[in-house]
Length: 626
Image (cartoon, rainbow, N blue to C red):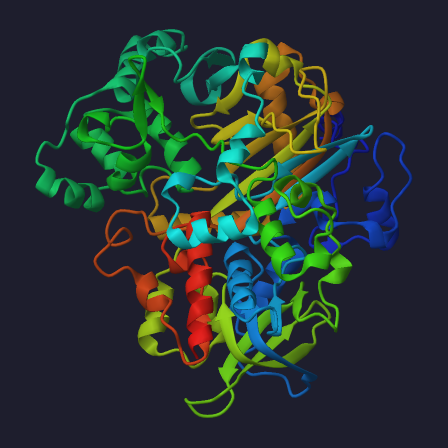
C-alpha cells in the first residue's frame, strides 16, 4: 500500500486536509494547510477564509454533525441551561442559502432597511449549495463552483427571480459575455466520451471526442464496442420515432414508468442505452434512469425528439444536447448569493456594486454578526427548536439554536422563515400539524459530490481534444476543464501548459434498489467516507483515464477539494408516486404556520436556483402581511 500511495502522490505536500476523520486540525495544522507550493508565507488563522479551505467542504463534518444531532432527537427536550441572548428581531431566517438570503433581502427592502433580521446557518460559509472554491498557485487565482453550477434557463425565470436579478444589477445576458467563445476552437476541443474497459470490456482505455458535434453513427463507429451496441447507441441519440403517438395518455404513461423500463420495454434497447441514459439522469437528477421517471427522460434525455422531448434540439441535421449551462460566474451561483448579501449587509461585501465588483470582492466575514447591524448573519448556528411564544395568536416566535461548543441559545422575533431543507422542519417545529409532517416526510434528496482538482497543466486533455468529458458507468458522470471565464480583474490564463481546475461531478446511486433506498445508501456512504479515500480514488481514476497520454497524479495534482452534498437535489422526479403532480407534497409542506413561513427550493419542488429565489420572496411577503 505504501508503494501504491507513493505512486499516486498521496503523501505529496499539496493543500488537502482541513478536517481529518471529522476532527478539526490544530491551529498550526490549519496554518500549514494554507501554505502554498509557491513558498508564500503561512496565513494567520484570522485570515483563513472559507472559500480557500480545501479537503472536505460543502456539508463538512462539523456542519453534518450539528444537523445529525437534531435528526437524532437530541433536542426533543431542551436542556435546562439555555443561554438567553436577550436579542429581539423582526425576522429570523433559518438558512443562509439562496432562498434564505432572498427572503431576508425582500423583507429588508420592503421595510426600507429598518427591520432587524437574524440569519442562522449551520455551515461555516453562506450560499447554501451555491459555494465557491478558490485556489492560489504561484500568484495565480483560480475559482470554481463548489456546488450550484449555473443559472439554468434564465429566459424561463419566474417573475419574482427576474425582479430580484434586476434590482441587484445582475444582467443574465452579460454573464455570457464573460466567456471566451473562441477557446474551444482555438485549442480544437470538444466533448468526449471515455470508454472504460472496466465497463465496456475493451482492451485499453479509449477516448472518443466530438460527442454531440458529428452524426452519431460516425461517433459511435469509433467506439471500442460491438457493432450491435454501436447501432443501438446511434439510434438512441438520433431516433426521431414517436414511441407514444397518443398524446392524451403520453404524460401519464411517462410518469408511471421508470426511464430504464421505457428504454428496455418501449424502445427495445439494452444495457448500453441504459448506461448512456444514466449520464443524463445522474447529472441532472442525481440518480440512475432506473429510479427516474420516463417523463424526466422526456425532459432531459435522448430518444424523445420524435415525441416532442425537450432534452435535444436539431442543428445542422444533428440532434444536439439541449443542456448548456453557460449562464454563469466562475463560481457558479455563489456570486448570486454575494449580490444578495451585499444588498442587506453592504460592509460584508466591500467594493463596487457591479457584477464584476461583487464577484471579485474579498468577503469580510468579520462583518457578518456585528451588534450594531440591523441584519446579522450567524454561521455554525443550527436551529433546533422554533415555537410560538404563547397561544396560537402569539405575536412572537422563539428560536433555539446550538453551536459547536454544545451550548443552546435563545432568540426571539416577530416571525421566522424556515429556509433550510424542508425535511428538517419536522424535527425542529413541534407545532406542525400532522398532515404537514406527513407531507414533509415525503421530501427526498439525492446526494452529489462536486470535486475540484488543481492541475499543474492540462496538456494530456488538450492533446486528446477534450473539454467536456462524459464517463458512462465510470467514477464521475461528467468532468470538464474549467470554463474560460474572465470577470473584471479575474483573468486567469487558460492554456494547456498553465495550471487549471478540473471540475468533476459524482453522484451516488445503486441500480436495482428502490429510489428511496438508493438515496439513503448514497447519503450513508457520503457522510462516512474520509477525505483520504476520496483523494485516493480521484488520483487513481485520473491516472487511469489520462496516464496513457502522459498524466501523472503524483506530479500533476496540486490541490483537491471535495464538496459533499448529502441532500444535493430535492427529489420529486421518480416514477409515481414520486413524480405525482396532482397532490405534490411541497404544497402542503410549505403552508404557513402562524408566524412561521417556509422557503427553500424544495418548497417549489425543484432544485432550480430561480425557484429558490421565488420561494424566498413568497415567504418574505407572507411575513410582511402578519
